[in-house]
Amino acid sequence: MLNYFSFQPQEISMAVVIFNLFLAAIISFAIAFLHKWTRAGLSYSQSLFATLVMLCVITAVIITVVQNNVFGALGLLGAFTFIRFRTIIKETRDIAFVFFALAEGVAAGLGHYAVAIVSTIFISFIVYLIFKYKLGSASGKKLILLLTASAPIGEDLLNARLSENNIAVSMISGKKHDSIHEYVFYVHGEKLADILDKALNEMARSLQIINYEIVSSRESIEY
Image (cartoon, rainbow, N blue to C red; front, top):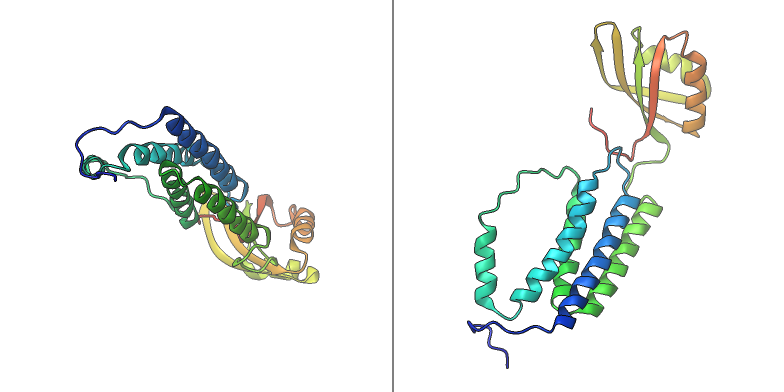
């Protein structure tokens, strides 16, 4: 019978420790690459990739050490209270992946190898389905247009020029820096990407468009 209140350190097999860390490392890389592969935002932080890998392995180490000792777990909890985290995670999806890495680290550290492997595969499959079939996303017939011009371009003017292509726009924001005008438009229509790109190329000179960028409305951008 295990004595969870024992002050005596309990020897852990080196083979168990190595296997726990090895499994946690494999799972953590799988989670990190899944996060990178399924990310739809405009920016990607390599530090989050490293964080997911390290978090899973470190959690496995912690759980392996304190799993049979309540006093050790409480001491570790007390040590963590001195740590402050100031980094703000903007994407709720990133938070979910952090918990994903933590959960798998706990499973590996406790030696629940079947749970760790099966849950990783199952959750990864769910994430893949959401990414593959764009579950919960806005309609695929919607885009964001980031446009920079040397002359003002109103919503009505752009709609008039794009109406023949069955494309409509609505302005989200607009600002001016010296003689440069920057706009963000919400665009919707049929077969948008290729038609919109061609139409903007044709009217670039007449509307004094300096540059433009077409972004999927599913992607995360800040205005």
